[in-house]
Image 1: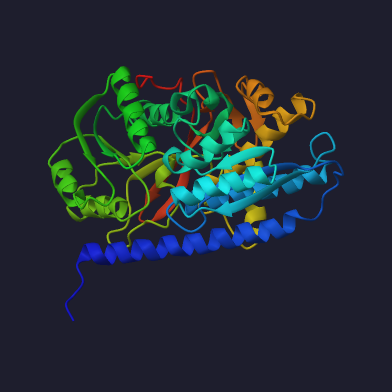
Image 2: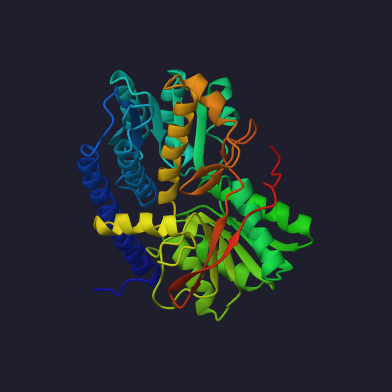
Amino acid sequence: MSRPKRGDVMTHITRARIALVIIAVAAGVLAATAAARTDTAAAGKPIVIGAVVDLTKNMAPFDAPALLAAQLEIKAINKKGGVDGRPLKIVFLNDQLDPAKTKQFAVQMLQKKVDIGWVTCDVNYAAPAAQEFLNAGKLTIAPCLGTDELSPIRFGAKGKLGFSFGNAAQDEGAAAAEFGYNTKGWRTAVVVTDNLLRYFQDDCKAFTARFTQLGGKIVAQESFTQGDKTINNVVSRVNNEKSDAIMFCTSFGADQPAFVSGLRSLHNNTPIINGWASDGNYWWPTNPKVTNFFYLTYASVYGDDPSAKVRAFEAQMKAAGHPAQTGGFLGGAAAIDGIAAAVKKAGGSTNGAKLASIMVKFHKLPTLSGNVSFSANLHTVFGRAYRVIEIEDNVAKFVKLVTASSPANIGR
């Protein structure tokens, strides 16, 4: 038998870790679903949220924790009487990122008369379901989608009914740049963009725009597409550049650990930073270990989050046997908080246009995830206080709260 190549081993390890995450979070969702059927003090007609999400493939480490958090938040709200006496309820189907299933499942949800649509945390994967919900006039929510495209930008006038409780890439990338420039003193950077997802592209664009606005210099721009087998070439080119930091916009797959371990194997210890997409330890290579790596996220899942409420919520997830894998779970809880606030202000109405007209005016709405703001131009959350997490020798810790002074201008 021939000896497997290092890249093949890395791919196998990464896939195995992702599989373990998927099993854990999917089991958590099922457990929470059973729990959510009980302990309701509200007696009115349920407000039904129909979720079409991925629980078994690449988006599962993000979709499933958000769904579990949503279920726990629903349970807490229902214990207090629901929303104007009406209990919240969430039902879900696993689309496995299959576009045909995604569309079909949204149609099934609408046939069941759901009041609100809920979609996966990437706009490309979410689009088939989002379009069906929007066409039906339903408020359409994503818990952690990171671009501003669940909006009129992608869906035209009907997109006015779409919102994401994720972090807007324009805001997240700007916050990463401000942390690097103002806190770490970085003055030069290499930017490496994974073109697989719009979110990755926008995050790096926002970092570039804000970093240069502050006075920093981008010494090189590199790009690849997840799985195109060019990551080792990118490592070689980046290693030849001299900079204070590297902004690396990607997630999951084998290319993230391959890039990080590749640089460190060459004894290049330049700081690397990313947004929420690098959250979680499921991708960490073990040799060499991840060092001098930073990322921004909703919450620290390492027991040191600065918010007592967040730590208490994480304890609930852990007590249920399904600890949070990434901070993105908070988007699920925040989305439920936002839905509840909008329905309450609408006098109990679940009319999509009415709820959207309220949600678009949210300005620093208190949620478990912190203050949530939207605008006519930005239907994804901006202005949150990000947690900066640092990884040294495969040990992660919270280091600082960072709020962007404003979202970066990326040309739209």
